[in-house]
Length: 102
Image 1 (cartoon, rainbow, N blue to C red):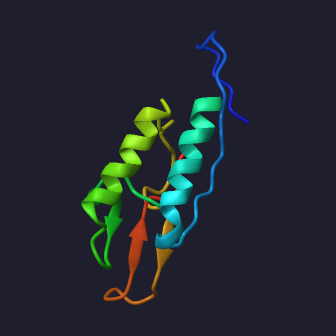
Image 2: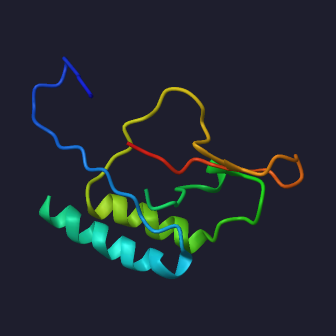
Image 3: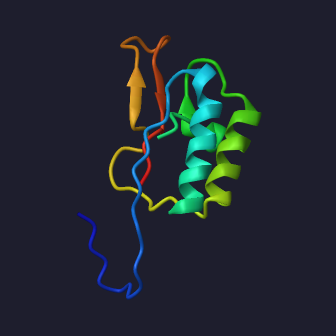
C-alpha cells in the first residue's frame, strides 16, 4: 500500500510485467503504450543500471524511455538495494540489473 499524505490529487499505480524474451519485448512495449493511452519490461533505462554481462543495446534503452515518456509514467523511486535482479554466483559471471520499478 502506498500512502502519501502530502499529495491531494488522485493517481493510479499500474503494475506491468513485460516479457523477458527479446523477441517479445516489442509486443510488450506496444501493449504498454495501449494501456497508457487508456489508463517490468525486464528493461533498464540507462547503462548505469546494469553491472556485468553483455552491455544492453542503446536503442532498447531509448525505446523503453520513450514508452515511459509517451505514457506519462514516472519512476516512484526506491528504498533498499539498487539492483533488483541478479544472476551468477561467481564474480566473473555475476550480472546485476535494476529491472523492477514502481
